Length: 489
Ligand SMILES: Cc1cc2nc3c(=O)[nH]c(=O)nc-3n(C[C@H](O)[C@H](O)[C@H](O)COP(=O)(O)OP(=O)(O)OC[C@H]3O[C@@H](n4cnc5c(N)ncnc54)[C@H](O)[C@@H]3O)c2cc1C
Image (tube, rainbow, N blue to C red; front, side):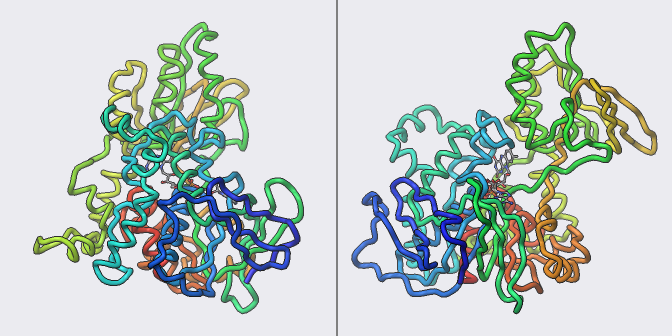
């Protein structure tokens, strides 16, 4: 199923894990077992049935680890599972560590950590109630609670009031879980995405991060993870000392901490965006610069809205189609995302996910007298040597503002991978997506989170919010995400 050049990508065995090592002949060998009792195979359980399919996952973040964990536990219970290869340029959960941009690692996780890789610990697709329960029980070994117990920190966490972990702590949990399962990780950059000549299988061309010869991975399905690349604004240079984005900002934090003591008058900083990426950046700037900066949040509404969070909202993230509630609950009706009109789904996303600041961020910003919101949709930025001019529009009128620094935090392009597609795959995908129209793709995401009418299967959880449920693009229902994807193999 797969071809690799010799030694091009050595699977990095994770500590305390079974690791699948790809032999030089291309065969798969299970090597080294150092698993603890909790994850050892129970003698009563059947060995996993053979499966010939292979699933590829781009990115080794929480989504990939949730799929690997569910696959591992299903195999342990005797279910046929696909081979799984995960490719990441930096290793497991690097986006959360604070060493690879996207965060400094010190920010608090927005979602509760109990929404971990197994949440909601309720499946509907692995047979009867008892079988689904057995899967959930196995997954509990890899839960946030399981991690804390393993680290001897469980009671401490409870006694402190079940605190939110930092992003860096969250990355350690994901790495811990990855270490407990059979994770075939290639530390490599995916450079090209194509298919075999018969268009039945994916072919990924990967460049090992440590250098060496590129190699090819072949699979029946491909899952794209990660937020994508930062969305830019016309006029934004690729690199400029005064302009940052939602990924690169975090690598400059130390510089701002130093500037606080150096500047003679407060800096003017513009943050473009009204969602959680902008929120985290504003909080970090306030923390780093305190009264040495005036921070303006430039958004089309001119008001910072906070996220709606209550049971009614949360349950649509955990159980979007109400299937779990119908199977296991007693109410006559279950809330169902699929019954909402598109207008109501988009309204829900606006209130709970997109373009809103979390309550935690709002609490901090409410206390910051140097933060203001400013009305306008930014049309263009002009970078001078030491300042940045921002042209924005509201109600047909243009205005121009000048800042010492600008952070473009408008979110991320979930379709970033199209630039990696080879010509044939690009043309075929463009034909079924109205030339990569984001709205057309959002409508065309199937139950298993794959793009309808396209083979081989391409799972796009980042774009599954509208069609399948608001939790799939984020961390809100990783257990359900892994069920939906693995059930089709
Ligand atoms: C600052 C910040 C805070 C957030 N907080 C929350 C939160 O609290 N709750 C929540 O639900 N969501 C949150 N999000 C949203 C979050 O980004 C998504 O939930 C996230 O994408 C989920 O993780 P993932 O597994 O999809 O991807 P990630 O953890 O982002 O992993 C993607 C991986 O892909 C790898 N990669 C990318 N391109 C390539 C390539 N070409 N080749 C090889 N590897 C590649 C990267 O190295 C990375 O490790 C936050 C986002 C940001 C930016």
